[in-house]
Length: 252
Ligand code: 13P
Image (cartoon, rainbow, N blue to C red):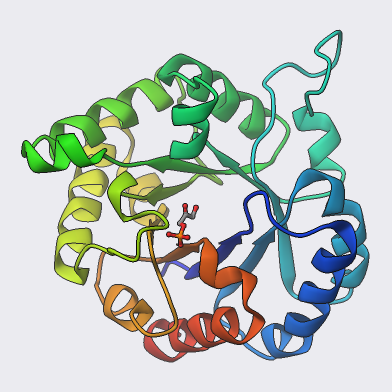
């Protein structure tokens, strides 16, 4: 019922030339895989060039962040309207943005609203830090993040959620498939309290955090997990392709 989705978050990696070379390497292979939505999220400055490379393919484009205002005197920022010309998706509230750039629940909420307003599909990231995990506060933190990020938002069509435990990002310490499935199940049950059945059932929830070609199957095979948000491994064309292929095989 839900089309699986695998997105590559390239983070602050690749120059424009490198981004073009990377997506060239992936393009044909990715395009051959159907029944999975495939998204690449290069840095802002490469969006236009990557868009050109994938224009006749089934690969979708996403940004890694945006500001919530439409235009104006916000030096250095990129608006939802600007992105809407280039991409279909935008990652919002990534833990690195919360940690290094002071993004609060309120800011994340304004960004999610602004993205939905222009028809961009937000990939909303939530997840607990190591101290919360160790103190057994995962459910509480994830529930609070969900509520603050979505406060006042009535229509969630297009929304994608990514559960990324902060302690599993870039550390090589992925959580287990069962644990991720459990938290993602909880997220879906929480969403069901806030939104109608149809919206909740069609909502895609991804796992992210040290996903590789080796462990991706363990996550993808879980019933609640609809795909992956991949960081480091998405910078390697062969690994990313392998993750998408495995997703198609398991969920397709
Ligand atoms: P890694 O896959 O490098 O752990 O990063 C995950 C992530 O933050 C994706 O958004």
